[in-house]
Length: 320
Image 1 (tube, rainbow, N blue to C red):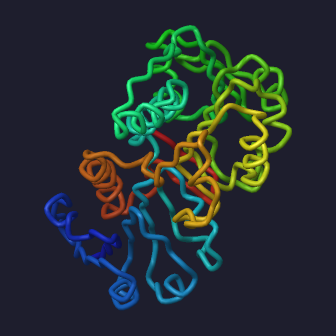
Image 2 (image 1 turned 135 degrees about the vertical axis):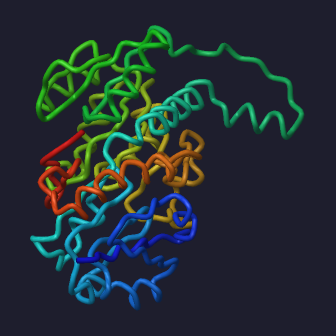
């Protein structure tokens, strides 16, 4: 029996040359919502990158059996009301580590070395020097110890940093000096120079970074959030930044996206904003398609029990 895969993405056409033809497979492409509404009733499977499903689309998807997202996080799908429990969801866990790790380090160095100030001085042709702090010898606490965190930890260790993981399931993890429980987070933050947030967004982790977290951090410490906006209490963060409870923040994700133009985070001098680009890289589509193609062959063979990175209602039940 033939199957239909619907690719939904603002740039869906870029997938045409990357998806290898498979016997018994028809591939359709939707670059916008109107096309998705028209084509989704024909779809047995969906491939999504930046597109967010909603209840109306799911109601139209009468044949849907499988959703493959090319993102690590899947809360934008599992949280949609009306997602049938018998639709299998698979993520792309494992392909985002390098780009997320590099962006975290970029934020860390830019904050610590006051890189926005350097750029302002360049524009004004002003020659001012000040001592440049090093990552070497600093301590970074990483909230959320998954595949991306392992990639980050390896790179942070290359900068001679001490890396401490904070996890709901503490265990020995490569490249971490140690991993502690979430209950131990305040004592870890008392010594940390950075808190890098990589934890998935679930009901349990909503606003897990809050006023108590900032109070536990050193006034010289920085927050870097590359997880989801909902894991940080933004009002508490604004208070901490304005009152110098912490030194600054590098933020790639926000409660409301795009970040509203009147949000004060845009203009605070101790904040660096990036537009949710942590998972993006010039190689991400090709890498994601190669990953998806393996699951696609299992799907077409009727061997869904061997799917990689199966997610149900936000919980990963099978991983790479």
